[in-house]
Image 1 (cartoon, rainbow, N blue to C red):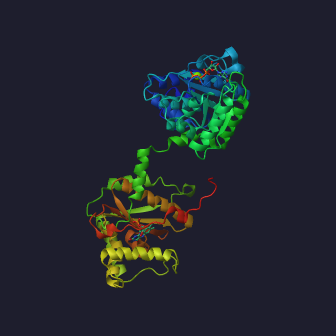
Image 2: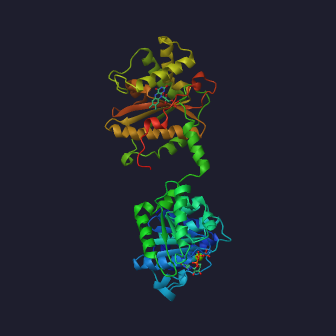
Image 3: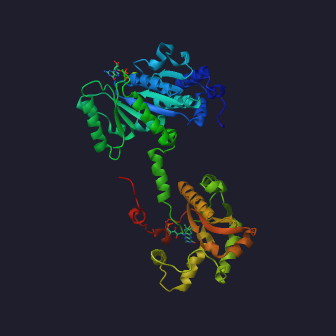
Length: 488
Ligand SMILES: Nc1nc2c(ncn2[C@@H]2O[C@H](COP(=O)(O)OP(=O)(O)OP(=O)(O)O)[C@@H](O)[C@H]2O)c(=O)[nH]1
Ligand SMILES: Cc1cc2nc3c(=O)[nH]c(=O)nc-3n(C[C@H](O)[C@H](O)[C@H](O)COP(=O)(O)O)c2cc1C
Ligand SMILES: [Mg+2]
């Protein structure tokens, strides 16, 4: 494990109750080293099933947690419980009776119960709760139950705390049910009408189902259950549902939720993707070597089948770039394209033929190149071999023995480079044109015979005033290339 060291981590991971209790206290108090404990626990988290029990004050959450605890213990689980701001005690349920009171004092090794107050938390109660849950997960409990009132926590925060979210509703007055936030319905995996011994329970359950149908469209599959927590009625069924959710992808889903970028980052990622254009005229402004290295350092995290990472990159600037450009441009002028070059199909067909033509005509129109003006077209294509004046040129190669699948990996790597460049205000143009001159490139870069040229790429700062820059090739709308099935 790479977690930064903390003396409590090893005993904690071994399930030592004193270490668990001390780690939780350290997190609660924001003690020095608590971040290291939290990071270490988070790195080991993901095995426990974390069940969040949320709902209005007095809904019967604690009573239900106690009953559920008893049921899960009967099923042989080891259980950690965290209660945020409890006003009623968690005792360990009927099974444990008086033997277990609170966590560290507990006699039963199978249960660890901890209450925390929401006041006075450094970094917020949600973060503290999340970290404590991770500690219990890392300490080896099978199930971690978290009771929260839900107030002051956003839905996103609850998603990051629990894998399975149970919302407890008291039977109520219609108004009270109406007050349930739509957001809660969006994130609930199970809705429980507790106090089903009261007359209004049936109506409440019906209203909740209706609300799920109307306000949370597409969530009609969310079960609405009834329990009488004080008697244990419906608790075994609830445990069944919770277990079913665990096995159908629930376990660890809270960790996936944490990787979801916050909204502002969503916008930034989208902008980097949507602002990318193939730029065909660059400013002479140089790009620092460190910047290129940084971009490649990000791009190397591209996925590749069985992590083969088939890319090899030749980064050229200054005289090295000039040398390659001179060699290839003069080969182009002499008409020395390699024979047998198979990048595109021999014979074009629709709809690809039209799209291709459209791109060419639009580009030539912007540049004032008339149809049939061979010399001007030649000169424009030639600019590829100057990397469109970009200060940095990249040539990508691959081991010839690799197959088509590796080119798929390669594409993802190339896109990463282009997006990472955008994020830094830089522009690119991916270039297949270089593959017309593999031998010339091999000679200029002293490539071994085993390496094949995949493509080239220009990298630099776009010339904002360039006519070519006004080219915005259209894209087909989603419904033209997507088939959706099974969503309703
Ligand atoms: N009639 C009835 N009463 C219940 C039931 N479950 C809980 N209660 C009672 O409801 C009251 C509140 O129960 P708690 O379990 O403390 O409720 P809670 O949601 O944990 O409350 P807070 O932690 O304060 O938000 C207690 O008096 C319980 O005995 C039930 O199924 N039926
Ligand atoms: C693998 C690949 C090779 C390309 N080769 C060239 C090229 O050699 N010369 C060029 O001017 N544009 C080249 N392009 C750019 C495409 O024409 C461009 O991506 C397409 O028209 C869409 O425009 P956009 O990238 O500006 O959105 C290439 C793009 C890709 C993905
Ligand atoms: Mg409670």
